[in-house]
Image 1 (cartoon, helix red, strand yellow):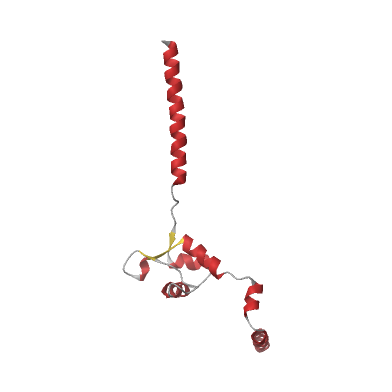
Image 2 (tube, rainbow, N blue to C red):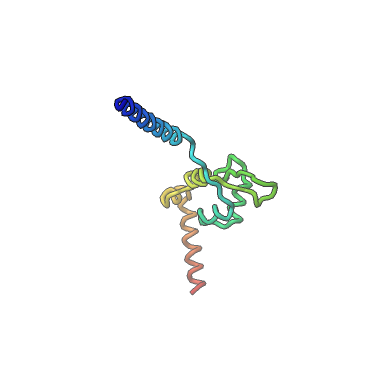
Length: 124
C-alpha cells in the first residue's frame, strides 16, 4: 500500500506542475491591455497644450498629426487616447534636428536666423 500511495502523490505533484506550466503559457499568450489616457494626460506626456491635443483629435485620419480617439461618452470629456496611438504618433512625428533642417530651404533658414537676431536685439 505504501508504494501505491507514493505513486499517487508523485502523479498528483506532476499533474499540478504541468497544469501550472500550461496556465502560465496560456496567460502569457493573452493580449496585454492597452491603457487609455485623457487629453490632459496625453498633453503632459507629449509636452503639449491640451488645446493642441484636442486639435490633433479633430484632424482627418490621413493627416500625419492625427491622434485616433476612443469616445467613451457623448461629450468631448469622454475622449480617451490609447497608449499605442500615442507611441505611433511619436514615431510618425519625431524628427531629428538634421532632418528638420534638411526639409527647409536654406533661404528660410537664413531668414529665421535674422528674425531671431532682431528679437534678441529688441529684447536687450
